[in-house]
Length: 99
Image (cartoon, rainbow, N blue to C red; front, side):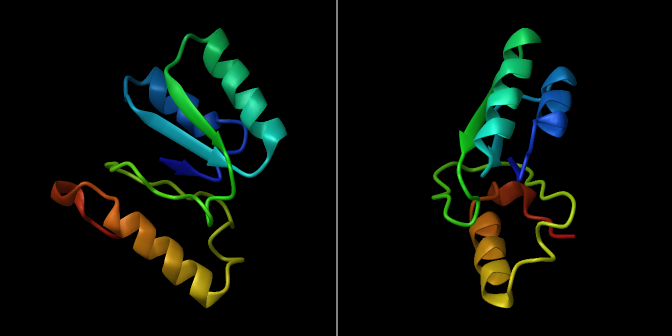
């Protein structure tokens, strides 16, 4: 899962490398639309969700969560803790490694 995926640069690249069940989440509808179009043109299987990742109801388990750039740094302490808890509880149990 790529939180704050913007135009899907990393999600699409991961799909090109053979990773499957990739999900990108971003608040910007323009970024999500661009990402979907790029994935479609490249025939990549990527799910894109247009939503604020802070309000996302995590319903799937995933192996890796990406949160790149400064998104995490601008969050207040409560939002950071809440987001980290959501991510941690939705990681596949065999892969729980926090860096």
